[in-house]
Image 1 (tube, rainbow, N blue to C red):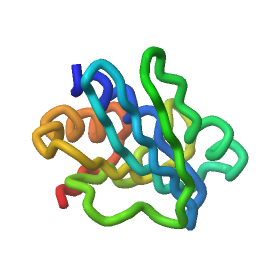
Image 2: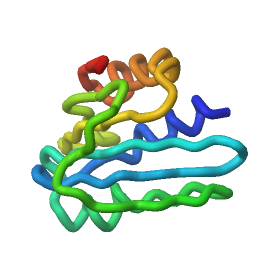
Image 3: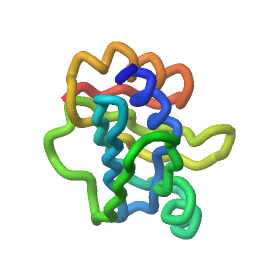
Image 4: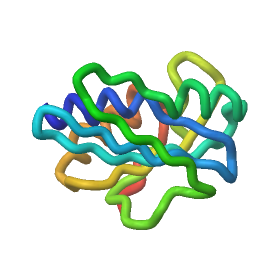
Length: 117
């Protein structure tokens, strides 16, 4: 169940360069933390949509920061956002073994480059 939530969050990432959002999601005994670093998404879309996930049955907290914090176990660099020309870097925190789901999703779905930390 955790891996499903993490993969779902993969598609939610984005923000303006020099701006990032940290998303904490909790529900059904699963906690997920990601940070989306904007590369090319217009700031209003980033803040109003990409960093405002609606995950049914989960408590979601979003905070905006200048850049993603250290401590990620992996990053999907230059991830494309669902059929748009927009790109972002998605940083993943938490359980390192989730990389087995995140790396293929990054490379295949988001057309990004997986960077293990």
